Amino acid sequence: MTKAVIDTDKCVGHGQCAMMAPDVFDLDADGYARVIAADITGDLRRDTETAAMACPEQAIGIED
Ligand code: SF4
Image (cartoon, rainbow, N blue to C red):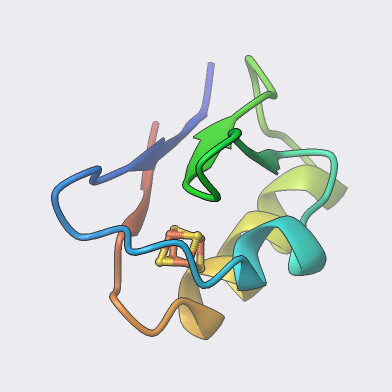
């Protein structure tokens, strides 16, 4: 299983991740990101990589 992870100490809630990978990330009521996909394979992994590059805080990681 491959997981998307968010470093909550770094996330400041820009929201790019939810726009780049809406099937992987959502924003909570305070605007901070949370992971909504249990397993990211195929297109979801590609979208997560795109979101990770777009995150200004470098708060997104991928764990295999
Ligand atoms: S783009 Fe980065 S800083 Fe912004 S909400 Fe997503 S994880 Fe947090």
